[in-house]
Every structure is written in C-alpha cells, then in structure tokens.
Amino acid sequence: MIICLDVGNSHIYGGLYRNSELVLQFRKTSRERFTSDEFGIFLRSVLKENNFTPEEVSEISICSVVPDLNHSIRSAALKYFNIEPFFLKPGVKTGLKIKYRNPLEVGADRIANAIAAVDKFPGKNLIVVDFGTATTFCVISKQKEYLGGIIIPGVKISMEILESSTAQLPAVEITEAVEVVGRSTVESIQSGLYFGQIGMVNELKKRITEEAFGEDKPVVIGTGGFSRLFESAGLFDIIIPTLVLDGLFKAILINRESEK
Image 1 (cartoon, rainbow, N blue to C red):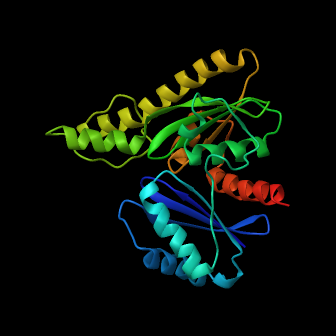
Image 2 (cartoon, helix red, strand yellow):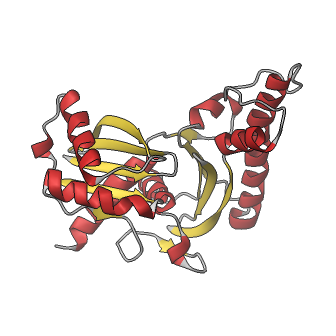
Image 3 (cartoon, one colour):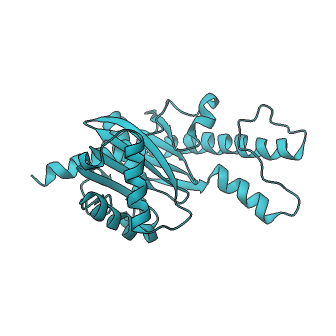
C-alpha cells in the first residue's frame, strides 16, 4: 500500500492506495505545527481506525508547499513506518516538460495535478483549476508541456481578508449563492465570493485558451476542496477532487520505474 500526502497551507490531504485503487482519504490541519511523533501516531491511528494495517504500507509519496513541516513528516515516516518518503520536487521524474522561466518555482502540488491530468487525458490540451487555499490554474499542452499558470486568492482567503480588514463585515458561510444581488450584508458577501470566483475563472479560461491553444479547445478539470461548490456553474468538463493524490501515486510509480 502507498500513502500519498498533499501538504498544503491549510490542510494535509492524504490518501491510501491499495494496488491502483484509492481506498481511504483523510485530512489534518497544517496550520498548527506538530512533532514527528504526533504525525506518526496520527497516520498509524487513521489507518487502524479504518481497518488497514500500517505494516502493509510500502511507500509514502509527498508533495509539500510548507517546508517547515517536511522534517517532521519525513522523520515520522522513518520512525513509524521505516520508510524513506518520496518527495515530489525538482529533479525527480514527472513526464512533463516544465516551461516556467525558473522550474524550481512551480509548486509541487501543481506538478502533481498536472501529472495526473496528463495521465487521465493523454494527447489533450489541459487547464486544471484547483480551488484550495489559493485558486490556481495549471496550463498543459497535448505535448505534455507545463506552460505555466495563474494564482489568485482563494474563496476562503478572500472571505478572511474581508473579515480581518474591515470593521463591520462578518465572516460568513461559504456557500453557493442563489442570487447575484444580495439583500443583506451576509448575502452580499456570499454572492461576491461565489460569483466573483466564477467570473474570474470564466474570464481566465477564455484568455488562456486564446493565448495558449487558439482554436484547439482544452479539457478543463476542476479539483481542490472547494471545487464541488462550483459543480453547477458550468466551469469544468469534469471535477476530480482526488487529482493531486492521483498525481502523487503516479509520480512514485514513474520514479520507481526509472530506478530499475
């Protein structure tokens, strides 16, 4: 079995693969720092509580955008699973041609998304929209070229900024808005968060397609924790919430093959 961990700014999103099937998903906050013992015990407890045997884990695949946590997570893998974890980082095999001016700047989570997208839709131009702490776009050509992307404030960040930077605007539930014109402060904020993201994503999709692909329409994939919120908005061709985990699973297989 293989554990895959997406270490983000708000959560650690984890999955367990048995053979090629994702059989377990779990989350843990990453906003509070933890020791290697705390994280190792957490991982083993998650597995045991879901009737999986920790000793059957053979590999751990990780992408992380929180460097401060990497040492604790690596130490937990070594102590509690006797495994040297695989980190998706510059220098490892991805199957992609990174066209960033500085390839080292591309977030590991975005690379994981791209690996999975290319694997699931070979020979297609792709736009991956990830609704996480930030809303990110990955643009990948049918030649497996990672052309670049876009990063904008995510829906939760936008809400938190409104709350913390204004005297009278409250925190609100992040939900699908029914009407654009809000009839209360709460409804107005909810409308702005929901329809604001939709407007940005639609405009950016249009501009990306014109600039990168011309008349060759891309497949648009939605993923990330808030992707289901926009399921009825017509933004995507398909939503794959587990895309980053699938990419981590694929990445460790690619690098396992390259070592033979």
